[in-house]
Amino acid sequence: MTLYLRILSYIKPYIGRLIAAAICTALAAAGNLYVPWIIKDVIDQVLTDKNATLLNAIAIGIVVIFFIRGVCFYGQNYLMSYVGERVIIDIRGAVYQKLQRLSVSFYDKNKTGTIMSYVTNDVSALQSAMVQNTIDMITEGCVLIGSIAAMFYLDWKLTLFTFCTFPAVLWLMDFFGKRIRRSGRKIQECTAEITSVLQETIASSRVIKSFVREEYEIERFREQNIANFRANMKNAQLMALLTPVIELVAAIGVTAIIWYGGHGVINGDLTAGSLVAFLVYAVNISNPVKRLTRVIGNIQKALAAAQRVFDILDMPEEVQEIEGAKPLPPIEGHVEFQNITFAYEPGETVLDDITFTAQPGDVIAIVGPSGAGKSTIANLLPRFYDVQAGKILIDGVNIKDVTLASLREQVGIVPQETILFNDTLYNNILYGRLEATVEEVEAAAKAANAHNFIMELPGGYETRLGDRGMNLSGGQRQRIAIARAILKNPRILVLDEATSALDTESERIVQEALDRLMVGRTSFVIAHRLSTVKNADRILVLQKGKIVEIGNHDALLANADGLYAHLYSIQYREKEAK
Image (cartoon, rainbow, N blue to C red; front, top):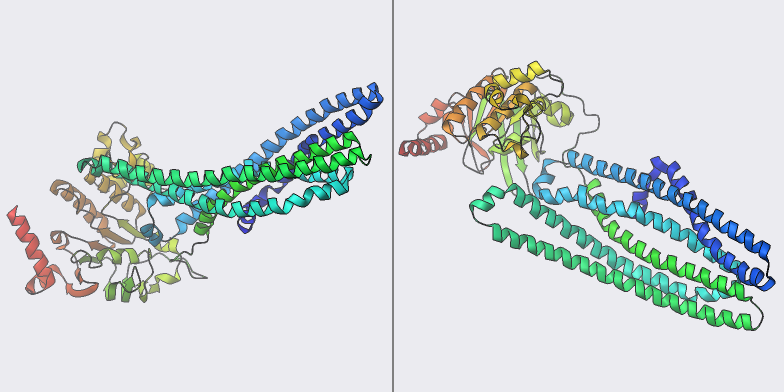
């Protein structure tokens, strides 16, 4: 109930339409309640007294009532659909906004397909609960209440006798409801796994084909499909059991009515028309109860999805702005790491007591073996993660004291794996600064050595890229990323192994663009190829999360026993061997 009430809280902005829908629903339900009363009058008055005038009035009344009922039925469905769809849009928007605000660590710990499932499958499951099931619940609820009221009016003793079966019905609804909800959650989890496998296999199609693993992936998908089938069959089993069990209890109740009411008619305590009308109302009760149990089962299933959705909405954001955080003013680019200690997981330290300073305009190279913590430094600077100890200062200001947007607007990142959007080349560059002019976009592309190859494409800047820009070469994608960073014009620049995946010719072209990009900016260059950091002002050599050496290229090479000289000699020998 708490979950359902939370869903309904999203209805508040549309309460006017909901009230109108409820009125239409009540009037439409009243049309159903009018029919048994007509049967009563036909039996007790028209047929008994041969009253033709009343018969004509009843006939006209039926037509008018069902016309009004049809209009109300349309209004009920349209208005409820409107409210339901708007609520789903709002919830889906809230989930997407939350996903945008969650820290990078959330994306590190969760599979892409699972995250996508929150916005697609889970919210879609909520949609059915909010629209059709809510309509059915209100409609059947009105019929149920109206039928009970009419039954009390006809014969209160017979009504109380009928209600003896109600406790059993309520217990069965609760019993099955809990199990349907658990199976519903299992279904959502299985659906999320299918989405996850699908996303992974589509994104990794080249790897799958290169290793000839199509059959392996087909089997992996089949296993998840079967798991989803089993979860759905468990739910279907519960739903299939629920309805006949409730119907059996209802049939016992109807049988009791016929037996007890029949004796009433025989003894003259009840008219035949009243008994028939009472039976119709009793059936009107059994049908809504039966439908309501199905609706409640569907809602329980949807609430399992709601739980997953609200788990995301309630998830704490690991990297948050402090209360009263102020915008970071335009910076010079003085960066200071003071005794930084960081771990992705408790007890697994990645950086240990890291301290260094970068002056405005400095080029700081960060090198070391794989797993030394190089990329982690790049992630801490824009506050993708928060440190466990120490602090990072930019122009003397602790980055935890400023707004995230103002910090990240002044830090540019060119990663090893360039992410481009399925959009035009122009819009991919414009992403760096959305208010930039056409001239500024083209100037950024020229500075990134990208303008010439863009103009050779059939659509020029309006050429649409495929998924992740895979219809461009690695060097071309990297130059687009550099153009985007140039357009952003940050004071601090992070190059995270920006040329490590490129061939020699592409690396030369991209390195020229990077050299232009770094002019006048404080730059942090994370590099695997040590030949690319020879001109850095200072080189930080990391090993197991600690800075073991610091200096320029020549000074570090002079220390023949140092880690930098060892790494450089290995790369030099590899180059000579080629």
